[in-house]
Image (cartoon, rainbow over all chains, first blue to last red):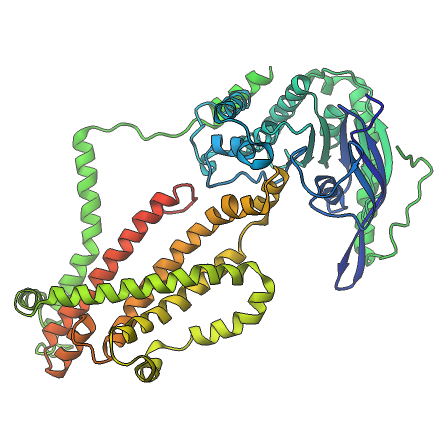
Length: 283
Length: 282
């Protein structure tokens, strides 16, 4: 990890103005992400994880606080931060190949046609999409669409990858294949990743650090360093340490789920989360 | 191992399904079956038409047989220049439709895209849309006379308002995810419009065109009631003055067939342009 951080979030808050008043969604999130780190954000669904990611992507602006990429404040979306959305967002009117090359045809990152072809072909091969270059997305399975979306984001060579539950809709086998493929790509290309997930197992298997956030509004509950060495392999799942960590982490996350259920049961308090934890840490 | 896992996924779940090559005889049989099924509803209608007078439910003097209508059709075509009427009607419909849609597409788009525009103009669009064009005939005569222009204005009115509504309902449903994806890939506003919004709007343009086409043909007769010399509406109108029921039938069938033909053409074009769309009927 280099001295200068890739990504800095400093006391970031986000609130939405709803019909019933101000709704805080993200509260006081501070986080520093170094070059090559893989950060997972984990917490109850609907807690504001995606909002954090959208703010890093530049799709939403924080109500207060600052977000920096390589020391510069985030003004909007940019090709330096590739985003993988939960619903893939593969363009149905373009073929697999045109989807992958889409970013490379935009003025922001335009390159020569031959280079474009080459890059697209490389990712088609890497993602196991050979034979489907000219297929329209309607003929693809969910796993394949996800691979097209990944390739499209990789192709523009964004050094930061933001992923919002990218494998949530896949079955267990496809999911595990995609996780391994992601690790493989990261090994060869070295990217900084922020992943939003609700799977403790996925977070443990992929990340260097795991950020557990609270029920709405999302605050950082705790940050866990993942002790496993890279490169990681499937066998890691079977190690005793992995099992223990998974159990511990799940306990923490389950408490947040329970808290969220209680919040929903009561009538959401607009004043913010009443939780204060002694083990709360800030990066 | 990753690649193995992927390869397995590819083999077991994602092999594209291709139809097995059949023998030539089988193909011919299938084509014949297809054509037969296509013709079947028409044959049923013809049969019912023949049988209708026999039931005694209607006076057979008032319902000409299909054969009589066909003879009349040929007679009109050869002696009364029915082709000219078809041409005139086709020209009016095409012109009115083209003008209507050319205006309906950008306006429908603006209404769908900009919320304030929608809130401002939605009641107006719905007010004018629900006015039957026939009700406007007197005014059209007052302002546009009884020339070609008057008929085209009527058809334009019908095409525009039916097109605008389809277009804007379609644009409202645009999935914002695609725009967000393009933004994160570095697209500018202009690129988003050209590369994302235009392809997403295309299906709605074609639907608007088809809906407007149907409405245009429906309005045609009304517009040709404005003292038209020629045109299928005029043929029907004149025939009704002389109580020539077989000619009325021939004119109506003519309109139906022309409309069907134009719709078919549009569907073929749409299928070409929208290969990528997921649909129940291929």
